Image (cartoon, rainbow, N blue to C red; front, side, top):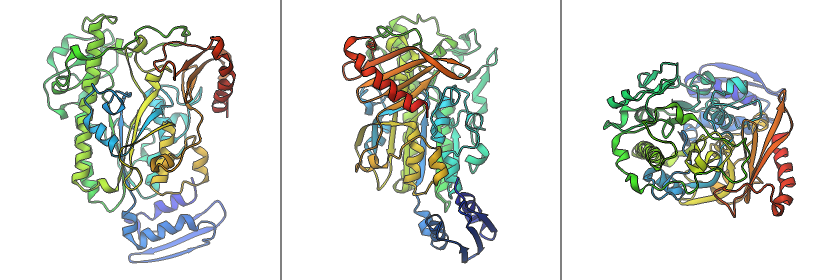
Length: 522
């Protein structure tokens, strides 16, 4: 961090009678004496004027501080491109679709890791994963990148009131003291219970579900009780977020509110009314339900769905595929409605014209494509994510971008949109790119490929190809390549055939491998 960050923290509006000094990296001493209504600032200003001047203006002219944009950061677990706005017209997602029409929709956005804990840690720090960092569902910033600055921490240190509600970091305690102005809220501890073997599972609301307990102590893979929205976890998240927006409206301080929804993560539990939006027999199934041709053995899928009781369904049957898709889409529609409630309240409170809204998912989700259910591999269904940004005064409604963007880009982009200078130490931490040229429609970004990794695999996606190398590791060091995959996305967007060994594609492999190494090894 720069020297100005703790200095700014000393000058919060609730501490205007305090004194503070700090020496910056250049050796300049900043001294400040604040008395209500009168501010005297003494400093060697030449080297740090660009950092201090905005602070002075904010103290002398409160309207300047009030004009800084708020941020509503909406996180949806396991949400792939299963939305109407991404071409799935059979999915009922009117509120998210409307949000997309109000800002910029990124059509080729990618997560860094296809698992929740690692993905969220990487996104919130802007730091890419490695073979030893951000590797699993239990990855955390404090555990894997101790001392790094998080997005909410950065905003908090520059005058924002930062709030976490729901599933934001995978573990709510991760970086909590430095990231959030208030303790993170994870609603409804009574909405969870412990299975016989110690697995935390979402509480079932349908009495019939008690008849379906898996060998791992979990309930059924789906349920559809006739209950109110706020009886499930996600309904509580939306309810509390709306209440918090009303409180934040009364604060003379910009805010960063992160609201994290659990659905459409397994198990597929949603009120019956959202299941009723779909006719099961009309739900389309995956066109290809077999493994990609010539796929290496290292390509596998998630077995998470098997930890729940499958209610007697055969995994290979059409019934199973239709029920699972039906459940997933019902959960998407449920979350879509809750997001709509939040956005409506933002507008009712007249906050929408000064609030940046971001919708992001930690990774994608396969729904039977190639026989895969869930995430945990380097196929596009796992790695590609929805990313929507609406920034009043910056984005043009109805804009789309086909640029290759990553989760890593959100931190530097929001720093730019909030007008806060990050400083050299933070920019050195970031592996992402500021996307504001794309948001403004005034330029491009310099990126040849988007990068994702999972276990022994490293993947890059260019405009034409998806290329993966599965490495052989010993003592944390890569010793060689065990297998590789190449999909021509122009000719084979469904990634049905691995063409890495085909004669006509062999000239493409060495430059793709070199490009991948340039991303992985620095």
